[in-house]
Image (cartoon, rainbow, N blue to C red; front, side):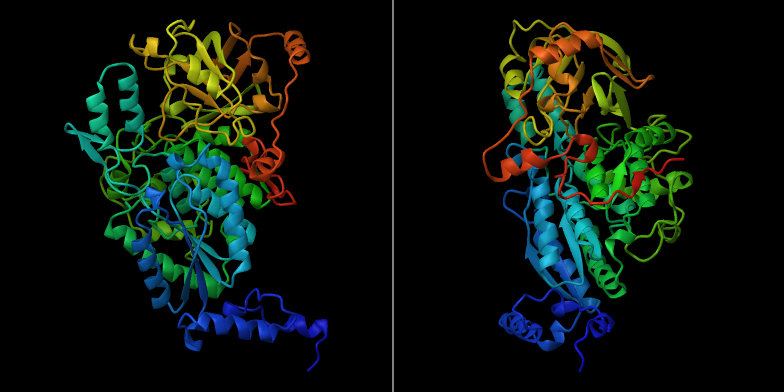
Length: 584
């Protein structure tokens, strides 16, 4: 038989256990050795001839958001085997918000590398990405987008709500609400201890529209989950049935070679941005969408996002923007109920992992039913989308504000800057009785951006100074180059770009400067002359953070800014293909 290159190109692409053979210089021996070892685990040739479906196992004792992982994997494997596939579970990094120092965002890109390289290195025809906590789903979608295989996302699901003194509570909007009461001395130590026992009533992700729930909803509208995959709570039979169906779909995409780039199209990303705006979603999702899009050569356009925001009302009555919790959204019909209301604004021809379009899946979901969690477009929670983008001499690359969770009184505001140079300075002085601050001032926190902290922690939710909190002050205008949790609320300007640590204008804001925010004009302005700012730059040059070795050095040397997704520069696609949303 000829071994010419022409003959090689006519051979079908390898599948299953024949994919990505280890390099020994002899392909036949490589396969022989691989099968010998896997047979040591009791597999037969009949099993090994099936489509191989990889499963990312992200369970960890440090990750209660993924605490249902054993049950999920059992149902998922059942679905794969019923459809004729061979499930192959493998571990990857697991990240939890409250158990990662300095922040899980610092490790998101590492998890994406871990996911990408293990998917690429090991033989599989498709992969199921099992994740839920804030940074896990973005990391998995980033890694899978770069690896290019058929992929399906399986969400771990939200926690159940608890009860404190007859009041329904859930993480983590209520965590912040009760902690603010404690700081303001409205409740005592005994009560804050009591509520601490009730805020997280089961395993699963936060029960409000935080980053985890936002990314779950986005994964579904992107077409990366089975229909209805975003909302079932973690500990329910609905969630297990979603897992089994995910297994069936994973075998289907493997056989049909439905690669992820055919799902994650510009139209899919625009649909995701619409949903983010309509659900009162986490501002963190903007960073994650930019990173996922960047892996495919697409640039998330903040001006385009703001344009969509002016056209897309907030329809979901869910905390922190509204009143309900994720299990209520699920009982109201989940994403299908929301998408029916958004239909005129969506690209219904976008393909999903089922092989059908978003529009076809909506038709299959039926007409819906009466409920009070998703509003109509005629009666929205907020007339415009949850997020607005601000620009000005303080944020040449843009800044984000979650207008739907802010005090309208502060959306046209000018005040005196009260400046904290970094997180340590904030912690040292925010509760000092001698702090010179009033409720009309603007709190400014520097150096918590991608390089500044590093990792862009969720420290942008600056606490109200204790002496003002005790006077009844509930909100103030706050500005930083960091992020805040999607569960948070308040008049908070985030993601100021470029960040202070690399010489963005925020670095030279001083106590007493005047700052103006105008939502109507989409303006974030430092009322200091260009000449004065130039003089400050010359007198106080910025030293960009560096490190001598290890992951910290890799992070600081290569991390991009917020508008580019805080990804590593070498992980983005080498060729740019356009912007999302696409220009009108």
